Amino acid sequence: MRTVLVSLAFLAGPASPAMAAGALTAADKERPVVIASDPWCPYACNPETEGREGYMVELAREVFREAGLSVDYRVVNFQVMRRMAADGSATLIPGVAADLDGTLLLPKLSQGNSANAVAVAPARDFTWKGPDSFTGHRLGVIKDYVYGGAIQAYVDAHKADPKRVEVLSGFGYSHVTQGLRMVMAGRMDLFLDDRNVLVWTLSRLPKADGVRVVSLEDDADLFVGVSKRDPRAAALATLLADGTAKLRASGRLAEILASYGLKDWEQPNR
Image 1 (cartoon, rainbow, N blue to C red):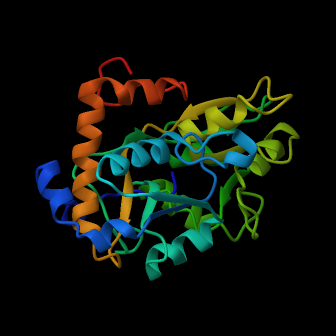
Image 2 (cartoon, helix red, strand yellow):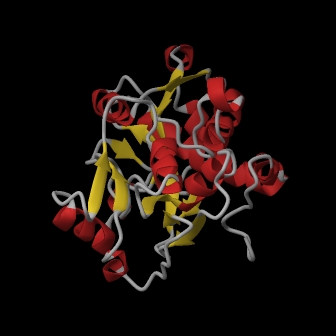
């Protein structure tokens, strides 16, 4: 996943939905909520290629529509997304598990859960028993993504050796498809990313038969993070948490997730 290791210090505290919405002035509601993300379906998608925006974007739209706020979704590359979070030109960043170097406020309630995983080339035998399992394989990663913990330590230790770690970089919208195609072509043994993202993207690639996804079993909650540069940040984070709970209770969250082939991460046997 792109960022991990949530700090509880950055979780927004509880408040009622009415209190959160009431904290917004008329001027606050006139300014649109700007969501920015690189394509990372099923969390945030490129509507031009996928025909839809991603379940976290849809969730945010429903939550903020009820609060009288409009939403503007912008597809950008990852480096631009980080800059927009830092300078406040983006209000929301979907699919984060950490605060992006202190730039984001995270809702008290999560908007998802997933784990790091690798797409494995058809001819490779791979079993996950820890970072040493990467030894002997060419591992693909995306520049500036933070995978966390011992996995990140392995990437950092070997990213200067392209025979062990190949770093995909550049200014394209997304490198997930590129990495998976390299695996399919035998130019890379493993490609590291979020489990749900890998499964989603593989299901839409031709000739992907035989490529399998292996979870690295480091499940973490994912959030729609709110830029701290936005003066509405605390109220918006509370609206997201309470709105997620309301959508869950009504069954609407399950409907949105099902349309992306997902189940509620808080439910048993998900």
